[in-house]
Length: 215
Image 1 (cartoon, rainbow, N blue to C red):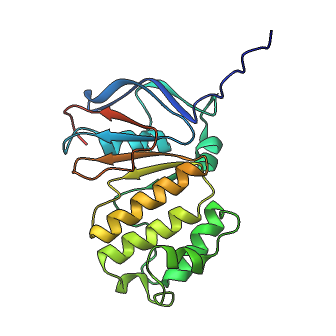
Image 2 (spheres, helix red, strand yellow; image 1 turned 60 degrees about the vertical axis):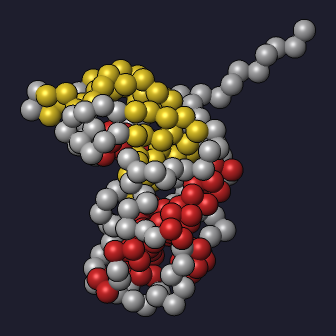
């Protein structure tokens, strides 16, 4: 009789996670998990707490209650910085650096995915030819694409994507979906907040719906 193999722990698991602002609940308690190769769509109206949830998971805000595990271990600061790449509403770019300098700087801080180049990432997101353009000269959509290039270069297995389709045209939306799909095929996972009609590709997708509250 052979032993049944023990499945690996979820890449991310949250138990009893809640957050309050000024003693008013924003979300929770929440229980959810995301496995490697899986996407979790976090849906909710504006003000439902989607952005707050991602900031709590990224360690930018402290949860009121609950636990967050990464790879089966309680998530500390080092675990989050190693495992999580966060794409927020702001592009997180230095205005007076060029597009390529921004990527070089961010990879110096956060590491770089093996076998990927800065120029290759810019080509993937449709920014070839903009390597020497200053970040402040880029349009909102181009800044979003540059942030996506930084995300693609990150070695972190868990992507936290806050409204990644904002400021993108239809081609850009398809780009995000292709990136998420490729990341999942390589064993990564993604949490994607959305309140629109577009969503990540249906590859082992779960859904978490948040109610009302302050975002």
